[in-house]
Length: 339
Image 1 (cartoon, helix red, strand yellow):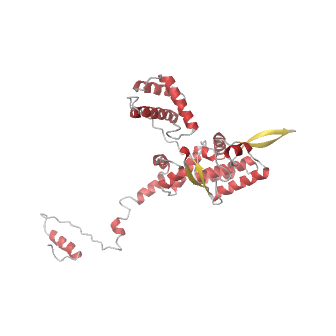
Image 2 (cartoon, helix red, strand yellow; image 1 turned 135 degrees about the horizontal axis):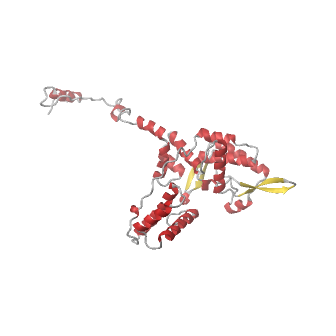
Image 3 (tube, one colour; image 1 turned 180 degrees about the vertical axis):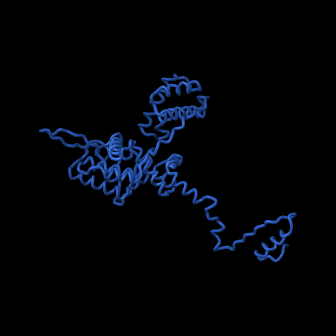
């Protein structure tokens, strides 16, 4: 998987564990209908959500597809049905909700400034959690343009809004004033990380201080969940901010092809998932281009060409007038008579 598809180490680890569990449940024989049914029954007996069961079955189906491609298994991967995952109820935030959450976070501690900056940057750029923790202090220029190495080791451009840059600059300036240097991360990445994690240590006499450490994807998840629950009363995942970015851009009229590039999707069907949550904007676009409202191509050319609207309401056998219509049409074209 690492060589052929350039999956990350974590993806390879998770899918390997899924296939190991699949073999433990059904045995090591080639997959068939009986084995898949047995695995489905095992999944149903586990305390898993529908989306988790679907994820496990997708991994197994891809494995069977791999076997089919090498003629090692006669059972077709197309016979493995994936359960339909119901769409969650509004799993994203509006721009107003994000700003409300960020503004509500106290700015009197380095952690509060960090949380403000990371939430604003991720919402305005649409990056993944794994991409967020890989950012360095020089990832964005003064105009908010930058790049990030995403899935499949593909680099793509990203952009941070001026609102996000202000929070980021405030956090970085405070971090430098406090002299916080994450030396371990600097050695590994070759540059100072943009965001730091923090752990509390006791310095004596009942006093304590924050010491910087690595900022992981798990730590970012805790930042999103803690602040969304505290200031919005919402239970959200780390992916919710990325989802919010995509839905916000679609609702503002961004072309889905441009959004695909900003999201780093190799397949546009991944981007189309977010169109389910932009129904209001899509309905407006549909009405704008529907048959009863759109301007036809011929009407757009009215200033350049003479419109010829010939309504032939009478046909041969239904009375006179048919030839007169033809003659009128020819006269309009500058032809005196039919040849």
